[in-house]
Image (cartoon, rainbow over all chains, first blue to last red):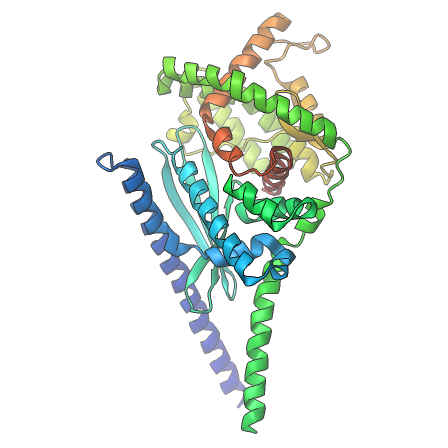
Length: 191
Length: 243
C-alpha cells in the first residue's frame, strides 16, 4: 500500500516537474518570438516612427500585467485610494511605463538579444534571463512573470542590470506620497 | 456538509488570493527601509547631483556627441577596448581578493591574449576568438564581498553616485591603476601628472561614448533626480557584488 502510494507520489512529481519545464520553455519561446518581432520592427525603415511604435506596443503589451504593476508600485497606499483614483493612477502609470519602454528602445542600435534560461522560482512565478549584447558590453535583462487568475503568465517586473523597474518606482512613489498626495504624484507622472 | 465544503472552498480561495499578494509584498518589503534610509549628506548630495547633472548635460554630452560624430564606431570601440585592457590588472587583483580564482585566471588569459594578439588591447580577441568573458571587478565590490556594508551615500563630483565603501574602493583602485602617476609608488607608466590626467579624461570620454544617450533616457524615469539615482546606484551595486 505504502509502496503504491510512493510510486504514485513520484509519478505525480515527475509529471509536474516535466510540465513545469515545458511551461517555462514555452513561455521563453513566446517572449523570444515577441522580442524578435520588436527587433524586426525597429529595423523596418519603411514605417513611420508613430506607426512603428504603435506596432511595437501592440506586440509586447499583452505580456505585461499593468494592473498588478500599478497596484504593487503603490504598496500599502493602494488600498487607501478609492476605485476611481486607482483607475486614474493605473491609466497614468501604464502610459508612463509604455513611454519609458519606447524611450529605451530608441537607444537600440545593432544590439542583439540573447535568451538564456527560464526557470520556475515558485509555483506561480517564472523568471526569464536575457542579455542585450552590444559591441563592447552586455546588459542583463530579467523578466519576472506571475501566473494570473486566468492562468496566463504575465510580467510584473523587469530587472535591467539588477535594477528593478517596479522597486525603483515603488521607492519613488512611497517617498512622494510621504510628502505629497496622490494628486501631486499624478501631476508629476503626467509632467 | 455541502455548505461546509462550500465554506472551505471559499476560505481556501480567499486565503490563496491573500497569500498571492503578500508574497509580492515579501519580495519588495525592504522598500519601507529605503524610504527611511540614513542619509546624513542628503543636502550636499542633492546639490552635487544637480551640479553633475548640469555638467553631464551641458559639457560632457556635447563633447561625447562631437567625438562620436567625428570618429567611426570601429575607432571608438578599439579605444574602449584599449582602456578596458589596461583596467584588466585591477580586475585580476580584485578577483583574487574575492577568491574568484577561475575568474582571475580567465581575466589573466584575456589580458595576455588582448595585449599580444589583440595588438596592445585594441581588439577584444579574447572574447571574439576565444569566447573568454570579462570579469570586471573593483575594490568597492571586493569590500562588499568581504561583508563591508555600503555606508551612507555620497555623490562625488564628476564621478556621480557613490557611497562610503565604494569611495574608498575608488581610492584604492586609483592607487593600483598603472595609468595614474603616483610618486609614492616605485613604478609609473606615465611620466607626468598632466599626462595621467589627459589619459584619465580620454578614458572617461571613451566610456561615456559607449553609453551615449543612456543617462538622458534613464533620467526620464525619475520623479526626483537625487533619490532616484541613489536608489538605482545602490540596487546596481548590490547586484554586481552578489555576482
